[in-house]
Image 1 (cartoon, helix red, strand yellow):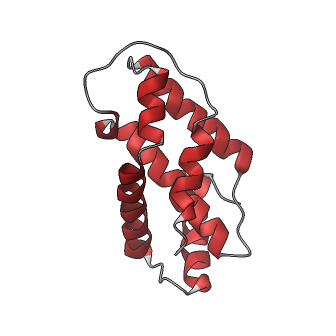
Image 2 (spheres, rainbow, N blue to C red):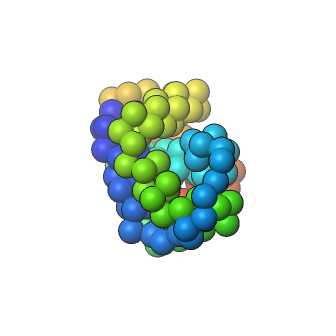
Length: 134
């Protein structure tokens, strides 16, 4: 699988804005933000591996903006959010989670059709991952 998926997703998120208050809980422990990034990464991976399914880029960017806004509303500063987004160890951890979730849904590395089947199922079920695909 491509290591690019969540790295690219998290890099896109750096262009978004956020507030400047301080928060106490580690951002990686905020489920809405963490899980949202994982969902975007899963959708991106499916769109990269399945030629017949594309990513909804504007929807994805808007969703990433909403995650950043949520973090900001919880009191995280730009610096805290950027540190989380640029944390290589956290990127690796989230990629592992995303790939495990894709595998649990039936994705087989190196089998593009398995990505397509999972992508179509996610779209049909209107999951957050499916909502980010077309």
